[in-house]
Length: 259
Length: 306
Ligand SMILES: Nc1ncnc2c1ncn2[C@@H]1O[C@H](COP(=O)(O)OP(=O)(O)OP(=O)(O)O)[C@@H](O)[C@H]1O
Ligand SMILES: [Mg+2]
Image (cartoon, rainbow over all chains, first blue to last red; front, side):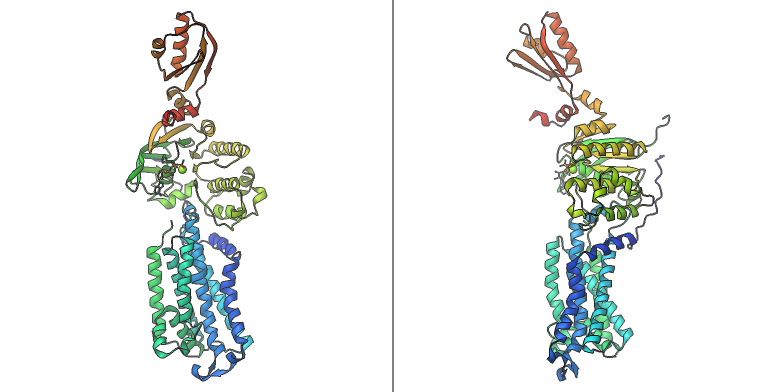
């Protein structure tokens, strides 16, 4: 049968699309809530805690470091949690709920480009937040910069991947923005606890610490602490992080729905 | 044209069910290149389901769809490159401005139109800096029309093209669609406005309860409809009801205050005049009103009987 021939359009179906990335970045800058949560909240917490005199005294229970030293990694993780769990999932669920992804799927660009852009933008925002916390800690409170740089970067990268994958999983399971926000909040508090917001992991009783070390943010906290102190992070923590990263990414990819 | 090219859109035996209920049941039609093809039908008839199968947004349960020879589901990536869509319901990112949206969507296509003149024709130039969420309903609709066209597609599918537009914007949009067609673009259009269908469409499929109730040119549909011509007069002497009832093509008879109102087809008009002449009856204030696409629609979709 002689049917009309299709124009062989080059189909930019790659998950990374520069125009989408640019548009989503513009939109991200317009989201005051996300910016405050990821970029301001962690460093603000650090400044407040660091201003309390007792936080700047060495603590025997923490192995001779000061509380403010222990809280820099905590605020680093806080930025990740705010970005991956609080900020990103409702954006993606909202896009799906409003039919924005559906509209985009009638164009040559796959809606996966939006997911990719959101993960990229939130990943970078989290890394900026980390850099700000480390810099403020160093400049304002004399907290030493991470000594085992390569180990720190590896742990950091794995942690960011875990946080984004967890966010993608929430976005994949939540039908509506409301549910997405609710799941985000439910996951938020245990995640903050494991990251050591209330009690740094080093200060937790051993039994508790061993359990917390199996959670993504508990393992991340320990790995970051060890690298900050100048040691290569224990493989057990890195393996826990890697397993979480693979499992969460796999689950998100399996369950993600565009409509 | 001397040769008959293969139709650009082919829909054959399309079927789609939700929860065991067929909402589109054995729908078939073809749209030729450069044609404006309309789909009319009552709410819930299955129009959106049909065109979204053509767009590849829904997967048919049965039947065959081809757009330029491509399967919209299997060859989705290629079809999206040559098909522009305006959906009945959709949104874009609420904080994206009109300009950003046009730039973004233009960037998706290999050979897009310049979006500025397009925005101008749709009277969006004053709104380029406005965020989507802050646009009025009609402005959003105009933006969606622009987004459907900005990729310079070979086929545009427009689901309720001018719903929510003011009369002037509606007329501007019709002109725009005619110009687009004059460039050779094929248009598949869902509408509830008979004036729009009559002005734009070369052919129309009337869909009712998931089935094609009629498929013809607008004037062909009007001719097909029973009882769409209304003949009314005041006879100088009483008429025999039985003779009236025997008129060809007659759909209904009514008497009121000595005035007779008949509905029927074209042939009924001549038959009435012959009947009157035979009995030497004069018809005072004889009125024959033209059937409209509206009447044809109501007749074809069975909504007129209720
Ligand atoms: N996703 C869906 N799930 C379940 N039922 C659906 C779905 N989409 C459509 N339907 C049903 O299919 C029928 C046809 O819907 P469709 O949207 O195609 O109608 P339509 O002709 O476009 O109507 P309208 O003029 O109101 O836009 C309706 O009864 C609707 O309830
Ligand atoms: Mg519809």
